[in-house]
Length: 313
Image (cartoon, rainbow, N blue to C red; front, side, top):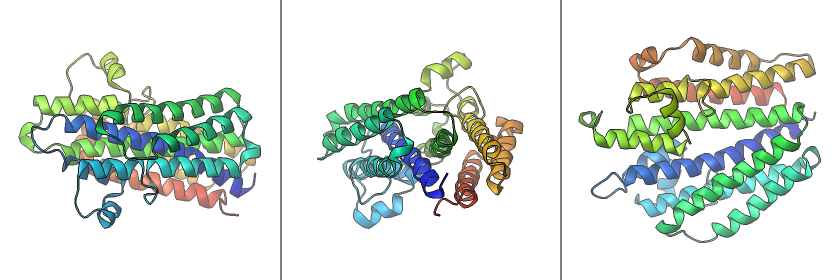
């Protein structure tokens, strides 16, 4: 496969996943803001930080307000990580690799772009945000469903899946970091009703609230929730699950091409770290420090894949 085609597939699915993940971050911010007695504008500092756009936002908006932050994350095409920009980038990549996609996958992607472009054409009222966020998640799910139900399990499938799970791992680690490092106002509130409500909000934002209850028949505890979203391989948005899938799809590419790259060793090392890790060790090291290190290593894997498979040739 041409590196440019592999690059288009990889980034098409990274952008689809990112669009949904940004919507989930906004959802988390909205839920946490509900716990505040006073102004909730400053809560959005953590959400913007988690999305990696805090400095870029400050260049456009001198003041931090909830309305501006939500608009920047959902609609502002000057922000390359906004939902609208991501859906457009996903569609552009899909068009570039159109002959590698089934008709169902292309149509689901194109319809998502048309629908979301219309919905996000103007600033959203606060009362319209839940429906808009649900629409974003639903459209992303339809694209994935069309893809999984119609594509051959070949190199096209593998590059697309790798892009999905690298982006998903990045998002889960950032959402966890928002909660534990930024959003909780003070150490005195750890274990409080506010703390528990925020953890519940984070679980709901990654569609993990009910499944957490199935695994941990207890109240919300920081260590259990971190364990669930980092190390629990049965949880489809956990870091461990993402790396099981990344390593698996890289191994299929290795078998197809008969060659192994630096990316394979990088992914294997991250997977091994997650397998042998314990939540006690992670919390002792510092959850924020662990997550920042993971985000850095995940980014390095993306760079190694791009280099190894010659994405720009």
